[in-house]
Image (tube, rainbow, N blue to C red; front, side, top):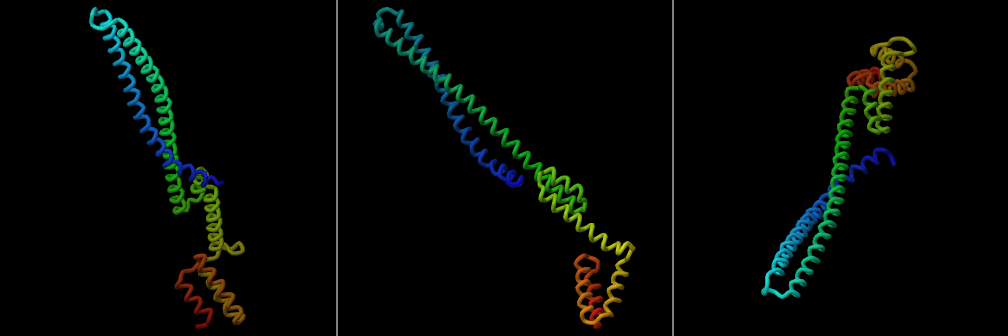
Length: 225
């Protein structure tokens, strides 16, 4: 799998991670409420236990056996609420750690995505400015090797056009001289030669050596019209 596909697949995981974080945050909210309830139960048990102990020392209100039973029940209730509070606290701590880690991962991915988007924009601007070396460097820093290869090819093609425009067999030749040479050769060799010159003329137009008006004029001269 290419680097581009790996990056795209990585970025596609951002919505999934955000959805997971939302679910875990909802669970965490419920767990916090549950933790608070267990704390309240424990506090209520302690209060009721203190009341029962107070009644135990009050003569003639409640029998001693019933007081002992109530105290035992309240003690068990307090122990249960305390253990549930510890369990909820540990679970909440682990869940909160997971949520925090995923949020940091999402933030890192979004920052990376922004950097890549910004880098691509800069590379395209450099291409438009024909600063191919800078564009190649940016594409390679982004891991876009295929794009870097494309710009290298474009740079090579542009270099070939410049050479064709400026040098023929080691001598400096102007566009006018090239056109004159084509026209002079077009008068020799008959139809076959004219066909060859028309093909060359078309190639010159495609390479940008001549514009549309020049192309039409030279075509007429080759055809003798």
